[in-house]
Amino acid sequence: MPLNPSRPDKQSLSAEDWAEAALEAVASGGLEAVAVEPLARALGVTKGSFYWHFASREALVRAALELWERRETVDIIRGVEEIADPYEKIVKLFKRANSSYKAGRLYLAMAAASDDPQVGEVVRRVSTLRLTYLHECYRALGLDEHEAQLWSTFAYATFIGNQQVHRDAPDRFPEGASFSEYFKLMIRTLIPRGDGVKARDDAKDGDGAVREEHPSVVSLRSPLGKTGSDS
View 1 (cartoon, helix red, strand yellow):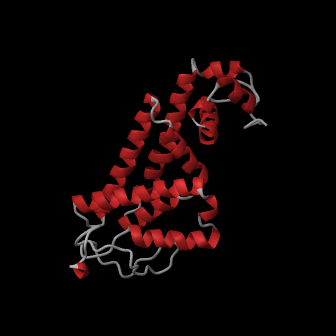
View 2: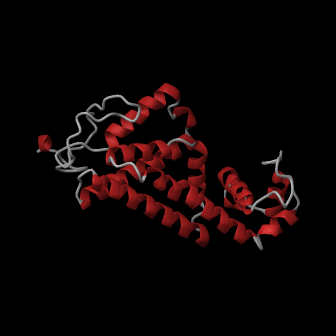
């Protein structure tokens, strides 16, 4: 079945349409699934449409990687930049990061193909950009450099783990009301509260509910290590 049957010829198909089709192929079958003839069949066009926009498969892969980086990282960061409150900004990032199963599968497929030099370069750049931005958000909460590095890494590792569980054990991944509860647990656990964070007693959860303390939250006096009660 054509991926986009409403755009049947080379004049109406854009380079981005081809890049989007390539990303869908990567998400479902890995980098090796990006091949001109199967994509042309899926799009309902001839190979001539492909060569209207691209000189080679490598050029298509490059365009697909650029689209993926822009859509799943650059645009998401831009979408939260105007949020002044760092807590709300992190909540919004977490919501976007966990809103698309397809996006998660695509990231895992890209990571699996990172031995390819072209793919590996973009995956590393995307991960660095995401971690750097998360680090800045945690710094804005009042954490010092070391604490912000620990918490941002913790948050990003949780994001990657969510994608893997959703792919490998989908029956165990929460849905519906259970996901709402799970998301609140993530927020309570991944956004620290303690002496290093400004008091926000009137702050709300991502869905408008008053935030509650959670026993998983680590004291900022000793992030990821012993708290005062452990000594």
